[in-house]
Image (tube, rainbow, N blue to C red; front, side, top):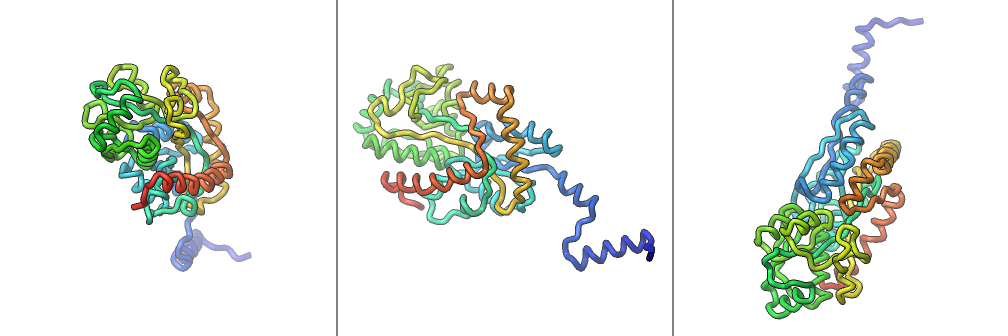
Length: 327
């Protein structure tokens, strides 16, 4: 039997590293696997996507024995964070909070996206969903949805509406199309800036997440004209839906899900899915989600992927019918 000294073994490892162009010693590989997990969020702190990220990040850190760092990268329609995630190494150390705007609506808003929602990502699980509300500054004149529509028809294009992300952009355009009105779109980089804009009077109205606006409505800092869900919200049971108020077929919501760069190993995806479902099924997390008026989804990677494949062409058609032209 031939024996090798420690020095010889070290030299062999070094040569293998140089010649192989990527050899990682066991200790180094273990250290690499324990790097912090970067959880990219396509909006500023305080918005619905940020809520979804911070809902699971602490418990996921415990489950993986790795720090999960929430990285908010706000931009118009969430493109920046989503592109960064798409170009990141598929090693399980970069994850993304995607939503219906970044993963579905953007495909109909842009002729050329710097990422492909269906090809550049592997879905892990949808996390939570929430409906949307049409809210206004308390000093804005119209007292009801009907009065708002009448005011918009009387002075076309005069009323300013905050537009938060791709979902907000599409929901706004379809609202204008369905109601036969013109509004002046003012884009914002996320839900939180749009919320501030409404309360400050910088804009008159906005379509924003029900959980986000409910505290402001109850405090009198906003008023509400209606919700975009098929049924009334448990958080705002006295507020009628748009459909109840005559806008037939108008229904919009927003989901938030966890994704990884494509080619992330299946065993990593499955582990992340198991842990996320376990986190969302805990009473502590469930109570937080329901208290905010959200619904838990926690579906499988296959179910999430199937929804994306169905919704991308569906919403493209809706947007085309509403006359939305891709940029």
